[in-house]
Image (cartoon, rainbow over all chains, first blue to last red; front, side, top):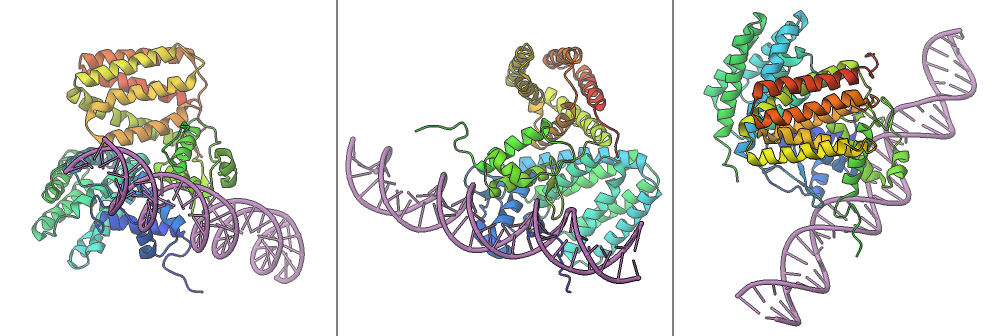
Length: 221
Length: 221
DNA sequence: ATTTCCCTAAAAATCGATTTTTTCATCAAT
DNA sequence: ATTGATGAAAAAATCGATTTTTAGGGAAAT
């Protein structure tokens, strides 16, 4: 019996994940209309699971569904990037405060582990996707102890939206180094439970990513 | 040529809306597993549009999708109600502040209109659904000028989640009167741009609904 | 030259049937 | 008595084909 890498999962969920990643990674042009039959062959699934995945992505906000004319990749608007970044800052600072209050030693351990993995994957500049995954997990670990599943849900959704913009920017080793230094500093502030300093640093951290992404986003229509 | 009440809209969207309302109104038991073929006949649609609607509702958070065993109505958990109410308070207070800063005279007009409709529909105690709609629109009008589409999206989602719990409580004219008084007071504070008092009142307003809903929610498992 | 209408090709949405997976009752073995 | 295998029935997921709607070109009328 051979175990495929996706055993036990529906075709619909697999396409959802694959399509979600491709949308966040910018594999489709902003504003592009999706050709469903092309997607069918590209992802190797039938019409039903594909359409179910598209519907879920539209509800999630990574696609737009127009009345009777299919699905479209949302346009990139500077105005929206500012909205996403601003709200992300507020919600993450909120979660950070609660995580600092609720976090136990298990949270500290997970955070240290995630931080270590992030630092290690940073040493492999060619393996971008591994770094991206480690980065996402680090931010999840940082806020994971906040105690509010709905807050974490919204933060995750905003993070995905933000990444769609951030990934448009070309890699920049200098900025990357600064951001990674902030990751390490955040861990230290978490251990010390220094809420004030940590909030300020997280704000700065998101603001810097925001500025970078902003440089690669054409003005709103 | 006859124009049906839902002309120009896909079957999938219609089932989505109908199912969404039925879920919020508590027409399904909490924790219940949905029998897809029964839904098919009940809503008078085929399998494909129904499944697309179910997928969208799962992504929205009004249904849970288990790996290969269909869709289930989420359980009602006191812990989750507290999470929803707490986060709703924070996000709505945030939006309220921004709406008070950005709101122009058009916003004031819309708010007055929504407030008037709400007061009028309150005089018809038998037409609950009309009041519910007016109530939802009032709260949307109050925060609509905040300037952040993503914040409004999350607030709307939390409002739907909250209503699923709130609607479990039997009608209570006394509390209803108190809540409606608060609606009127919120309008006055909006006109006066009294942010501090309005935030405090909105907090109280949500807290009262929360307490009512809390009384009808069994303890978490 | 512009507008309007019709017609056709393409795409989206939906349906009915098939395949796959789960559920659960039954029965044998320890 | 409990555990574990077995198989039929039910439910979920998927496929292929059909129906409906849109998009766009070209002819007729103003």
